Amino acid sequence: MDRIESLRIFARVVQCGSFTKAAATLQMPRSSVSMAIQELEARIGARLLARTTRRVAPTHEGIAFYERCERLLGDYEEVEGLFRQSSSRPTGRLSVNVPGRMGRLIFAPALPDFFRRYPEIELELGVTDRAIDLVHEGVDCAVRVGPLGDSSLVARKVGDIALCNCASPSYLHEHGTPETIDDLERHVAVGYASPTSGRLEEWEWREGGAVRTRPIPSRITVNNAEAYIACCLAGLGLIQIPLYDVRSHLAAGELVEVLPHLRAAPMPVHILYPHRRHLSRRLQVFVDWASALLREHAA
Image 1 (spheres, rainbow, N blue to C red):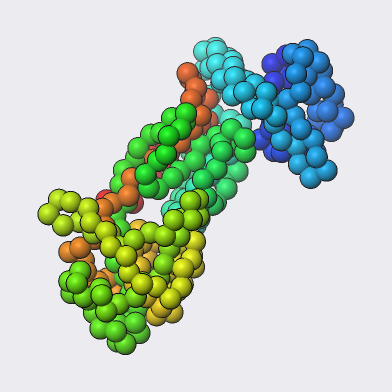
Image 2: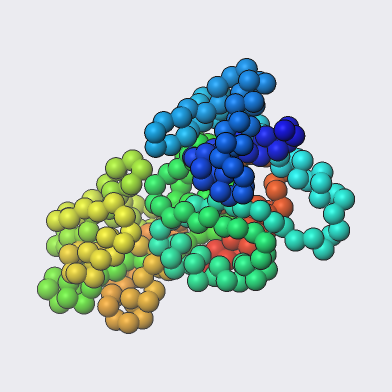
């Protein structure tokens, strides 16, 4: 089997986490996929994939090999592209991961525009608020909101998302409307724990150019945005949330902005992808399209 083709098969198995799924997307017999991996492992002298009854995952050597493999395949695609006509359209499969509500409120409604521009790209859209391992989970790029930790990934900042302070009319009727930070002593918040670290977020605001925080008591703590907003709508407390998340609720009068002069600092938005000397054309056009889309919603 062609060596480049065997690398493509290996990369697809890592991305799909399954020989069967990889074979289906490649339109090949499963036995051919399995044989290609066996021949590749024999040729390089290392076990690249750990097989279980439920999933196929790369070994430590497999993760390192996959990173190099992706770079090599990207370089090969670029070399091939040198001899294609400039009018050729990007093709192939992309795996993208975005935060849950961002996927529903921003990306999903805009995807028809993306597919009109790039009809030959297949998109696998994952939605989760947790941090993911792009290489291990076979994801080409991810959108993340908030500060980033140390990483070997390329981080392309596309803007800052505005936040607002909200409460339901029923909550304000019962507890009153806070006008100052000191008023918060008589209020409760819906607690939000980071789905990655479990750390409980404190109330934040900007004052005199500085960012300040303080704890506010809560009767309930959640770890995802859907539950966070639902609890606020139910009158369980104040929340701090990206403006795009609650714009429709504010317009409908289901939520009311409070302390508008004491908003938290905007949250940075980044598109992350593994370090490669050259991006594949399909990844490049998606990153450019997604960057423009997110800037429309940035502060």
